[in-house]
Amino acid sequence: MSTSTPERVDFLLIGAGIMSATVGTLLKELDPGARIVVLEALEDCALESSNGWNNAGTGHAANCELNYTPQKSDGTVDISRALEVNVEFDLSRQLWSYLVEKGIIDDPADFIRSCPHMSFVWGEDNVKFLQARFEAMSAHHCYHGMQFSTDRTEIAQWAPLIIEGREDNTPVAATRMITGTDVDYGTLTRILFKHLKNTSGVDVHYLHTVTDLKRDPQSHEWIITTHCSMTHEKRHFQSPFVFIGAGGGALELLEKSDIPEGHGYGGFPVGGIWLRCDDEVVSHQHNAKVYGMAPTGSPPMSVPHLDTRIVEGKRSVLFGPYAGFSTRFLKHGSLTDLFRSVRSDNVVPMLDVAKDNWDLTEYLISQVLQSGGHQFEMLTQFYPQAKRPQWQHVVAGQRVQIIRPTHKHHGGRLEFGTELISASDQSLAALLGASPGASTAAFIAIELLERCFADRLTPDGWLNRLREIFPTYGINLKTDADACRSIRAKTAQVLKLDNI
Image (tube, rainbow, N blue to C red; front, side, top):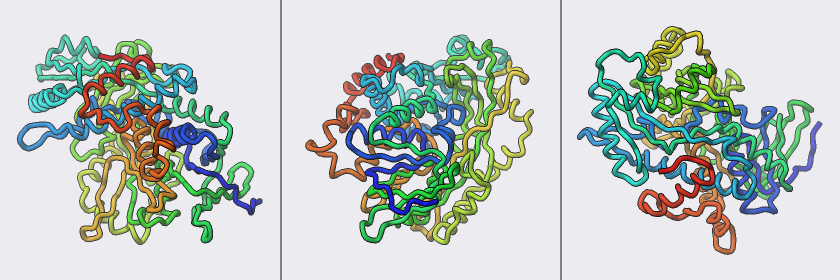
């Protein structure tokens, strides 16, 4: 069965994760009369990367992730990338605070809680690095309140599990930010979609797979064809704007759109596995997210960390993630995903990346071949007294790292981040990549507005409302210390978070 006349909407969003939830909520606040449709291939929202068990829920503020702060040849530490991510998370806090004050979010504790963020290292060289990192970061107002210690007794007070049973004399060091958070993005996504579904002018269609995405030759708007896996009905939608926020599925949809800006992009899938402990005796001793050093050649999503996690109100401890390889681009995807993504315009960039990233290839092979015993041994480096029967394997979500085309020899470069790709006529945008995606969803949504709706960001249009939602919009929190302190104090109060 097929509906021949397309249903016209103002904004069409593909994927029902945290990105579409954020973009849809923001567009409806800015344009209350807009007609919005969200299409999702699965039976509910937040079943892929946004699911609480498929990510670390760190609330990435770049407090503890050592891969954001590389050490330069002169021994100093570059904190510029960390600062970018740090203030991007402030925008998420501002959006959530606005939604709490408006009553869209009833209780912020349903999805966000204070949880100190720590970095923990051992070995003389690593301790020196962490001290240099601390000195660089604590001198900046964005990291006011950061603590550093090499004293095992003090570190044990912060996170006893990582010190108890550590009997050798190897030097250790830790930093701590009590302003860190644990975020259940799955619950947040469900809260936002519940609100959207109850809002006039918004329709969310589950079990609808996008099978085609092309321009209408007369209107130049997008015609989106979907297939409902329950009714087997084919439906058509027409929209002047499409956002592709489908996680690992975004690359294939971007390729279907055939916009020139998307040509040459490829994807490299990396899976994740956690060790999870639900034992309350263990979980109630650990109240921190503790990040360590990444193994050589590993992707950023594989930085080892021992995390407090509260998902749907239940407290657990996660360790990992261990990297894995699958040709699927989504946890619920197909083994043919990687092969279907190869096209004439991206095969050279993908081969170029394969040639230049042997460290990553060797690392992934070693991870795939690891036994359960090897994985548990890695856990004991963080938690010496861990007992194996208390921990279970949990398969996390798939991440698709970006292979970006380069002009040099028509090659490609593997990138570990997120990238918003938009059509030159501002009619379509797609988000590719992985971490720190969910944590910076509000920042990405603002970038989308600035690229695709610049003509509406005026005093007579959306600008004043946008500044109500984001009080620091247009203010650089990296340089304006007073504005940074003020907005963090306000959002901490609204979201019931610790502040310094």
